[in-house]
Length: 206
Image (cartoon, rainbow, N blue to C red; front, top):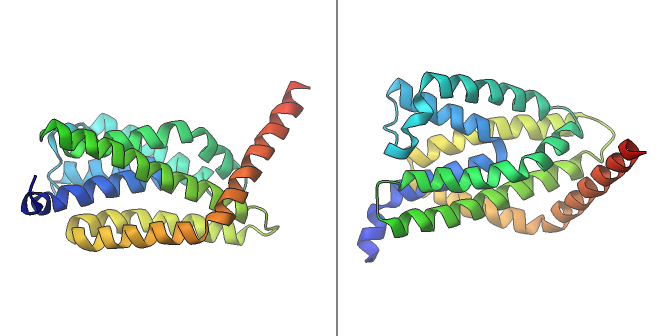
């Protein structure tokens, strides 16, 4: 495939990357926002994502977005939520990214799924580790600040991907570089989550 052909897919690349990235932070908010955009006619959804605009799906994703919004504001409950959603956000990010190219070449769909899953995994792990590290602080305000920051960041990122695809991809690269710089704190946070979960499971078994 030529470079010109790849550039022609730039809007789709940006949308797929945004859906995967957003899934790692706020999966249900992404599902609801994209579905609402399709239902209202603001965004023409790809064929394989059109189901997100169905009223029943909107109701379910909207409800779960509210639940996630609340759970993410409670220290340690947010880390437990993140731990459980390790098995949900990553495959969902891969599926959403693949759905953008569902009507295109099979090779593009498979590539989008692989990259989408990788982006969702990286974003999710960065979020989970970062939030766990923040939870070691005795005051709740840093946790709330981070949570509300994510609430704002996700819709802003989705808008940027649609309105300015190249701008979003540049921002995504910067996000990844920032996560690499903070890798030590993220890994420490993930270890803390695992130790906490093991301790609580042991106490329950007793």
